Image (tube, rainbow, N blue to C red):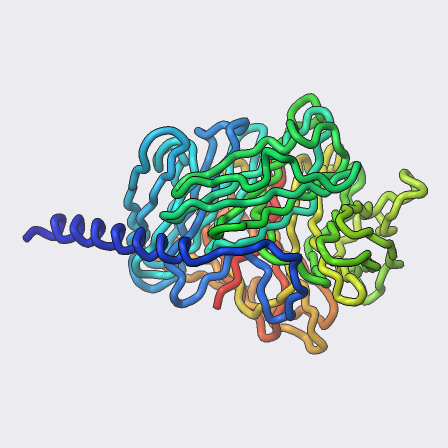
Length: 484
């Protein structure tokens, strides 16, 4: 038999086996959606965790208001062997289709979303190598990119949502398995808790996705936090905030949800830019009122900034402004001086479960325009990765490293591309003091733009990592992929 024939038979066998296994897993997983329990600090809050056995990624896809032709999917193989990647497009209209992509060892391949099929969710199976997967958009008005998920979950949370005039809030729920799922969607808004009848016991058909226009349900709400709880099966959920010209400068902020709630959230990579508006949204998904402390620490010194304390009622969502407090007297605000880079700790007393997420609009900030969001994390790790370090129109890419440990952490950053692991001297042996953050420029400044590369981050002590990408008309921010 020819090599091509063997390859085709192997693909069909693997595809059939994957479908049977996925169906069995989906059929066997059910949840009565109880209130979340606080988790230990050893549990990763990230939806993307690359382990030795990770072979499947789930990409929920863009909402219909964003141009599908501008969608991008990146496959980065940080391993030493060539990988075969099988991409299944669970099309919104029509039958599923399959595309096979070869990704050579230590290389990065980015495909236009149109090359992988019509609008819909993607299931990405990898054979060989160690493959990272990101999806996003590159468009003159909208730019963002972030990891796809390596796990499904019965619970997904988004704290930062908003639906004023000109802003669209989309919820995308992907069911990649062979059995139907059933979910409840809960909204915690400026006007209270809402459980829309149309979003209760909502059926998500097998191998399909449901795209929900939250802005048509929670209309003109300043604050909208979303929770997805599966009664049957497990799913993957993502959110897109789309700022149209009616809201000012166009922009988009894409994010996977947090698959768990926690009592302590960490953010790194914040910067108090003049002309920007930044908030941390805090949704109380626990069983009692939450006493929450919001503490910022300046990156340039050990000096901590004055914290803000607030009470978030059960099933409520609150926003705390970050910087520019004089402009909004009477509101909860952390006083961060203009131009200061900072890390952020959001902590709930008595282990009440909360979900925290930042949202920043760079409307008139010097040299930065766009919208970014970050779901934060509550479990540091020694190894992180990103599938890419640059996009079209790239101006700068930075990595923000926060060390919560009591000892200094020494960090090495690698660039994986064109069959090799590059280790620039300036990115090696970066010392991050205890309780401090350090921001490293990967592209821009004295580091000229290079071919798109995957980023690997290895630290001597567990850290948190966030990547920021600045282009001429947008900005993107993302928490990294935890590497096991």
